[in-house]
Image 1 (spheres, rainbow, N blue to C red):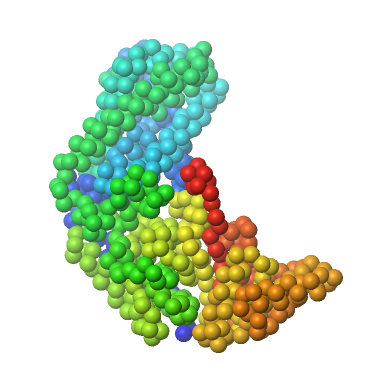
Image 2 (cartoon, one colour; image 1 turned 90 degrees about the vertical axis):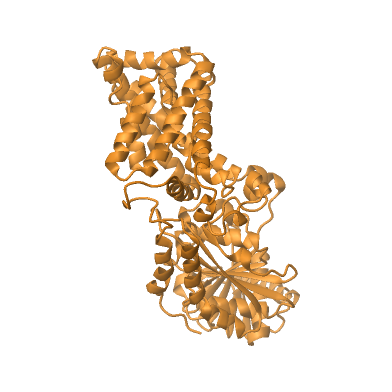
Length: 605
């Protein structure tokens, strides 16, 4: 079965459905009518939270770094205006909101903004508490780093005039001198203001309305004598560098009380109040199957350690039947009409199992800022479009007489959904295609890919397809678990499809030819490949040997090295020349490595 060219129309059919929201309330951009209801505002916030909670650590940190540095502009202008206007409270604060305007309208990350959208997901048990804490920690670290860089520049960059420098020290000293209990409650009201701004911004029709809301809200902070944690941290660092205060005192008596107050104000006084003013049907409108797909209580508390940490927008896999005793093969695909050969390969491998189930999952990755809220009719349309595209897949599996399931997942994420599906379905093997133009190639933007690929949930086979033909298989090996997986695949394809198998072992010197031949013969016998042809290459160049021998073969099966396979595919650092320079298809094999309990608990990103 030959794979056709990638069909944009097939993919867009489903993605067009994804673009339409329940009531025309997009995640960003378009104006649909004068006012949004509270439920519609909630949907827009959930849409934004989805994008943020699934962002990579790199994206979050550098967005927060830019936000923290922007806050130093607020500190600079507030101090300069105080010096210029003779300390007049109103005129001194006129430009205070500028840094916050940059952050909110520019799409940067600010910790106090994140007391609303990610918390809404977490309250609905769509994201786990560890996922929320991870998000908060990265954003707070980025904000503090950016603020510290700004404070260093203001201290030693000659930016302040002498009067402005005196005013800056006065602002910072005022925070230190304020009792911690007073700091906390002042910060609570500041947190209320910032999180309230987020709610109102998502209720706003246009940029001008947002600009006015942001300006007036943040102007209230200095006029009310309130405290914002990132501004306070920037002031504290400046005071440590230009004054005589110790950093420990600055943190414990100034920054930490403000941090706690901002958090309480944002989470309790805004998120909970605004959350419960929406209707009881809000979750059903925001997620397919509503409460039926929430995280379990254990997943909510522990996240990935016991299962999932996030619920994707649409996932029909939980509706499928399950045979816990069967050998389960997961086949994630992007375009059902052009990836049938991957399905055929999975079927051929499944046919050698006593009891096997193939689960083909159609993963639809939504564009950034796409609307992610649907009513039941819209959800049904998305699923119906996917089911129609999966008809060829069902026909292909039917021809093998193997039990199968099909499902659809709609999410911002692509590659991480493969791992989540493999974990949830208790898969024994994942068979997937790979190419730079497929959505898996976008996985480098997801969170946290390096960690995911270091704890594979099961065996992985990745097919670089150039017209799949399994009649003549070349299997290079130097031993190891990944080569053993390749041997199992070759043995199954030999039994199922009558493939001929050639084993290749490369040694560094002609003197090692005999020992290499003995190793390969023993290896073949132990893995049930006694009748395979054996080739010993004594040039020491593995890539050249594979390319040379592949000319007489139709499929090369290559095991991962100690550095791993999927992590380098995702980071685009896998430089196997064999992937691009051989004329036949290449199947890459990787087995999960073992990780201790300590590593799982303390090495996570």
